[in-house]
Image 1 (tube, each protein chain N blue to C red):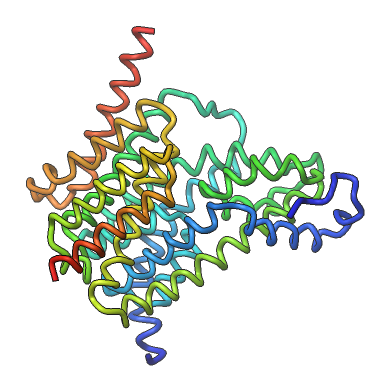
Image 2: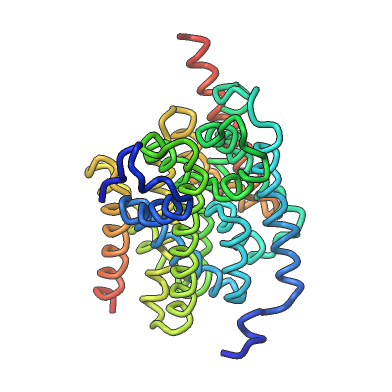
Length: 246
Length: 116
């Protein structure tokens, strides 16, 4: 499927643009990765004793895979609300530069801030990557509608995956249930590794995995925050050291 | 499944908003309000991104090391082996997420079947 040319009459209607955005979810492998990831999140929510509505509400209102698994895992293992909130908010800071860099792609001189609300909410790594790929092929005045369509499609795929994962975890044999749960660490590990372009990201990922078991031995209740701060700061130190030497 | 089971308890939904939705959403809304004037390559953001990546890495490790639910029925060696096998295939296939995930899953399922 190719998008219509920039001057095509197809782009005259905002609803058409929304529909093209919706159809664009079939044009990327990331949709499949998201499906597997959210299948795993649905199963994880089930096995951590959250309800289906809870899992769906987290996808709809949080709409950030890392924040969702951090929330489910920390709350599920007995962290306090404050500890979970801190871990979630640190993971979400990256959304700020993403939103800042993606909204100018859709803005026109007459765009009002409230028109960008849904686009800002839908911004997460997948949408961010796809915006940079698709938006140059969409006329500027139809980009908000296109992005809303694309985001609506991705959210729908993930809500469906959540529901399927939740019921599979409830009804499958133990082995297959374990296989669905294993999707979450595998897909997050590899998609984060794939997005790691700088040395600091690679070091943070590797050290974060290795330091967690050590931090867990301290049994402070803040394991994730302790290992994350330590590994992240060391990774930043490596980045800084390389910059200074360069 | 009853409606009550589907919804769960209201306290958990309240916690979702306080510990999940608000701490997450606040950054998007700040981006919407104060967009512009932030340098994506700034040193502070490099550090923030490194800490965020490491926190996510810690959660990935936690799921594998202290697994929830059905995953706990899989022996340690198979869980670690599945991640290692997936990682090797991921690197060999020039970072194919799909190939890495499939390899990890196949390793775990084959191992469970082989161990009986």
